[in-house]
Image 1 (cartoon, rainbow, N blue to C red):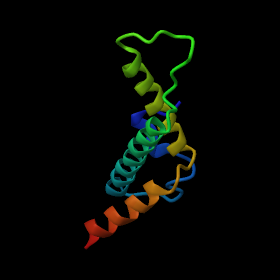
Image 2 (tube, rainbow, N blue to C red):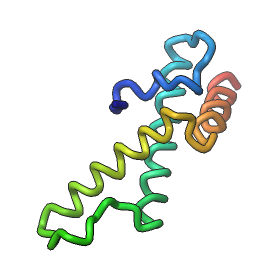
Image 3 (spheres, one colour):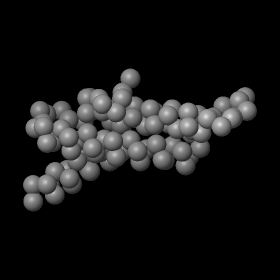
Image 4 (cartoon, helix red, strand yellow):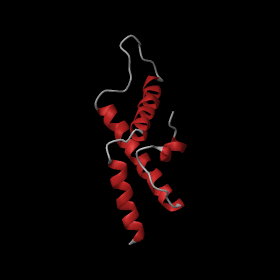
Length: 96
């Protein structure tokens, strides 16, 4: 299971050894991609709400946890390439 703390351990991103600063930039980029994907899953209606449940006051919060976990797993599996683009942009800006 991927958590916020080990997003940088994704197999498809970060194949080369990174400096500590690059590692922090990559982790930030991956968190941004996970947040983006979570919002896209929400907009697509894939928030995990089952038809058989009546909902309740905490349903929205708990489905957001599931949606966020799904988004982090997507990023860990390679995502949509947004994290890599963001990482390269942030790295270029830092080095400029």
